[in-house]
Length: 195
Image (cartoon, rainbow, N blue to C red):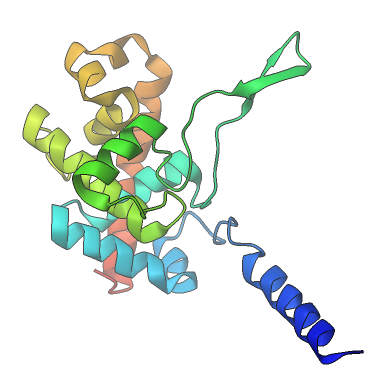
């Protein structure tokens, strides 16, 4: 086999290994210590966003759990017409933070830059910190209040201001679960001395 062909095959093999599994979630999503032990870059990203925006690590983690289950390339499900014909996704939400296209573009213009990506944990946590800090400033929601931060995150600040979530009992239940998970993650991270 010629040298260029061998080099090309080796390059293809390396490329296939590098891309594999990037979208997979860590194991044991009910254990914050296990999550950050498996993915050391996560804790660095969470702490950087906490230093910059003031959003606690556990609030970020609970929100990402709810939004994407820590899957970097998570997308919303497809919608179907007549039960079988795919007509597109439910929304443009993508990545760890499930940021919508328009909100992500706003973040890129104001803060993250156009090279930021929703499937990058550092960029996703910075986005969440940026968004939640604005919710704190505009709506007075404490950065430690994962429940109400999640309601504003899900329905948008305008929707939160209008109280649109009040007509969505399922969303209120999920937001409470995010709040409970945030408390659980915080206690776990304290016990394993990660925060």
